[in-house]
Length: 625
Image 1 (cartoon, rainbow, N blue to C red):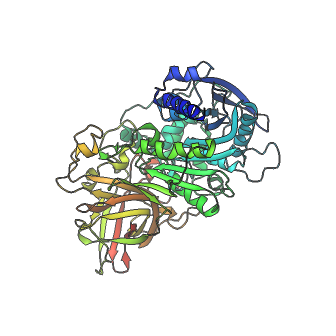
Image 2 (image 1 turned 180 degrees about the vertical axis):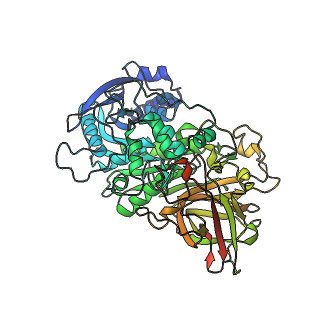
Image 3 (image 1 turned 60 degrees about the vertical axis):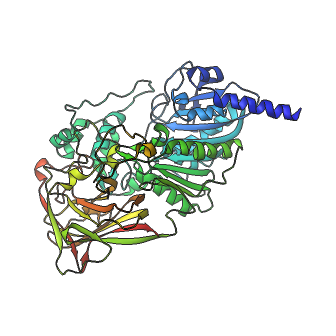
């Protein structure tokens, strides 16, 4: 009898596994219900619950809280992601899927607040935050949704990644596993709208001109898109000019844009909105996920994992980083980005071997996580996953590579008494972030060919000789620049580039067809990592300082972590420039209020980079020995 039951069970499982999961299957096997769940202060949050019709066993919850809508609305209308993406694997396992509109968005009541600060000291019912909203929602779900097993998992990408972090801070005992994916973590130093104090103009304006529109009451109708007068974003942002002109286009109703304008420096307002605040005593198992080439939240995944490691040493805390764009682990097969190929379907590997087993183990008691490493990192260049027991790896050695005369890089310090390279930064002719004419910021720019920039006089380029051995980087990059400028402020953009050898081509049998384009890859200058630093914050993000014209000073800053191997026969290249447009807003290159200055305040600046005894500029590489 027992063998019959086992045989029958596996036959049913095989049938479910092999069956095509489509809209019809979902509607035949799942029931959708919509609820308004009361929070502790009486505000009701709109929640869609997709529950299995099977009542023979109890099921775990998998929850996403989002400001982007749990549409489609109506109990007869089902969310397409349930069968279009890897969410279908959770349906096969019988998960109860929960999608909730966060406070003040779409069909939920209340007032929305961007990256609402976490409050660890709640005393009254009116003391709410995203953690308490998660707690109250989960508490209602486990008590009111039938046939649940009392276990809740939370995951989400980007802004929902922030809400996932807040779920981990909620303290609800039913929440057993949380996966913040590309989580919004810190919006002044690294994620989305600022990088090292520089406003990421293109993303900020494009996002908030629509997302930030006020919603006077719950609605199923989305905001009106801003109408650009040209499809050339370089032209639009350059002709619009100073930031105050973008404020006029925004109007008076976009609250967060107004906050940006009155909090130009890293003050208490920004510090309270750091998602790492309160990351102590985290109980759920954590799986932080990010993309090596995430144009929006590359910083957040690395730094959230790092904060949990430091502040919660007893938490079961893991990190996964793959060769993905923003959300690429669930939206693509992860075998290429732009012209660069990775030789395998990295997204499917992640889904099948990491994410789904992670939730199955912690919520369903299925399988094992014996093979899940502390850090599962895909190293581009060599195009292989590495399972590491710590990040950065213990074998990582910070190693400076120095700038030299004749546009060269060397691991030896310069020996000349007087060595420097100069360029003129002209805000009227800013360096574009890509060579193409575009209607919007692309995700592919993160691996784009930089040969177009090498040809500009306002970009200085340094490179090593041909590498005789593989060079693997694993960790945070640090730019340590010795500079002098002719004005009182400037930005510094550092790009780390992998120069492919002449004659290089991809073997399509090994690497696939990539994006299907026959791009010239020999001599390709692949962007591995780029970052900007607003010079006025070189000593303090809280207290900006102008430059003394023509006085030598140090500008030292971090670039987000990398995991990349420069293969034997390639070259390492570093580019330095002072504009990166329109990714980042233009610095007037004078120590003025950038958010309120005039078009006439933008001036040229001569930027001098020193590479000499006593003033040796370098990039500190995290070399894996």
